[in-house]
Image (cartoon, rainbow, N blue to C red):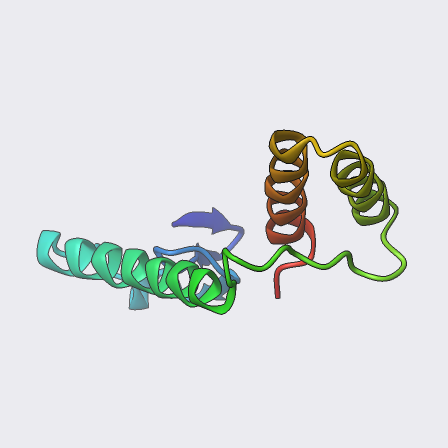
Length: 107
């Protein structure tokens, strides 16, 4: 909680948009409320992470996103490794492509 002129500025425990309210309408959260809000936020993050992981088939290589230069570069590296029968480098390229997609193309 912060102060912005005559308003208290609040934000949800798990992150999100801030809002302003009259400071007289705000009270400090109890320990139980803070713990509950923290657990709920952690559960939401975990559910999103698990849902994304379940959508990915680890046995199937990731597909490059059209129009993305980094995806195209990693796809070329993977193709070169495959052509050279370098399965370790091909796997490395798959891992890097998945990481890139999770970081930059995740919904």
